[in-house]
Image 1 (cartoon, helix red, strand yellow):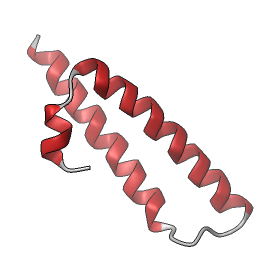
Image 2 (spheres, one colour; image 1 turned 135 degrees about the vertical axis):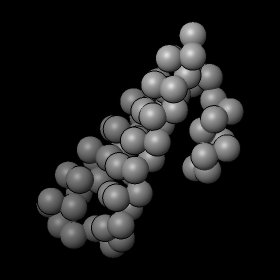
Image 3 (cartoon, helix red, strand yellow; image 1 turned 180 degrees about the vertical axis):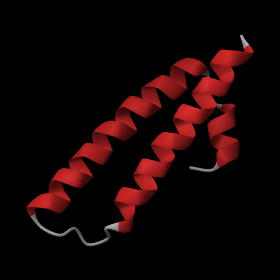
Image 4 (cartoon, one colour; image 1 turned 90 degrees about the horizontal axis):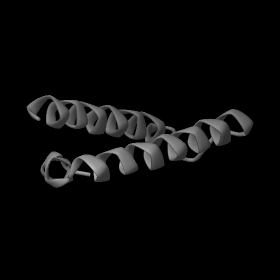
Length: 64
């Protein structure tokens, strides 16, 4: 997801996206612990996406 796409989301959409991405991250981490996943870089990408979403959410909430 590009930063321009993230900036276009509303506060409620950001919160919803964070929850879904955190769940996907947990599933990836669990799958990687059970047996090595094909592309372990997806864990890093997912973690960074959650961080970017949280940063944008915090920025939008502070503007109010």
